[in-house]
Length: 298
Image 1 (cartoon, rainbow, N blue to C red):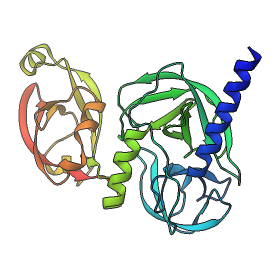
Image 2: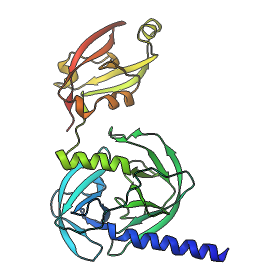
Image 3: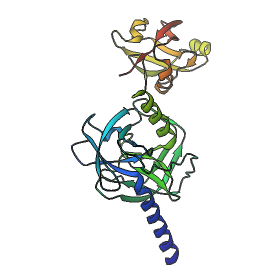
Image 4: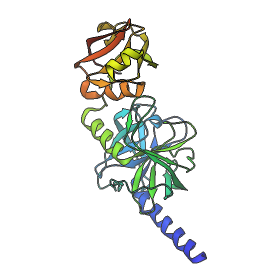
């Protein structure tokens, strides 16, 4: 048994040593520095949005000990991802787990570089699930929960499997009391958008809403039991301009059923921004249809 544990320990230490070349320190806030991961060899770095508190005067500590200025390429608070660029070449990019090899019970390592050297903590993948939306409406392609301890400065750092592949970025901002990892698929998608456009578009209606059960005859007519009751409509918002009012119940948008807030958030995608789409509501017990031009959330 001792030999097995000794071999495993050495192999995991080797994984950390190899991964260290792709892990950087991110100095983007007043308090303790955080961590980032080298995304491309020519200086693109991904990290957590919440650890980059300023848009300028950001610095990055590389694996060789040098400290270089970094420019903020863009950020997406809804997925807690930010992209930085440093003037460097020949860096060692992360080897992402693009094939999603993770299983519940797999041993994993959370790595961070809040100081000059890499730090590590060990845990297991405790839960996996399908894609989900954050409280801000960002789409995360898979639910990855671990029992690793997120030490100060570990946000923006990677989760590694025992094969040395980067499963994703660890974040302490997406949920309280739970260690969640943003998977590689989400990082690639969001980072690609930020590199191309500098921001991620999110649709906006300007409403506050809550799920409500529909009257029996209405439910039968629309083929669903619930809709979204508007409890507030912002003045001058896209919803207001379309004639929607407090007390209306949205049952569909652009031909897709709206039963709960997640349905609506999922339909307010960037490709719908600026487009006029049909919205079906229930008002005074009657089903009505109008059109709304989707705005862009700042």
